[in-house]
Length: 126
Image (cartoon, rainbow, N blue to C red):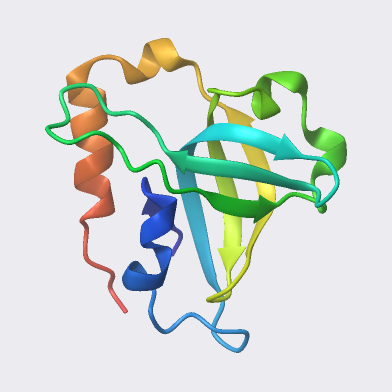
């Protein structure tokens, strides 16, 4: 089962058993901070959530995009873009296998955000 993650910095605490021998498939919905062409990665952080009591963390996570570099477009790597990234997490690296831009207008209604937050709290059947 793919795990939905809204705060990429929480990966180590959410998936403490992740390792090279136990890789997890995840879906991140995050904000792009920058594209690092030298390392072929996207630097991302938690997306801002309307009505959130505390400001989102400014901490960032690097996501390797070398496997999908040919499918990335400027909309996906532009500073501030909100993207959905399907990736594998091995306890150290996050490697993207799919990336899609998200229309921020769809993220504005508070009910949509609340639904996403609720989905991240669902228990696994494992």
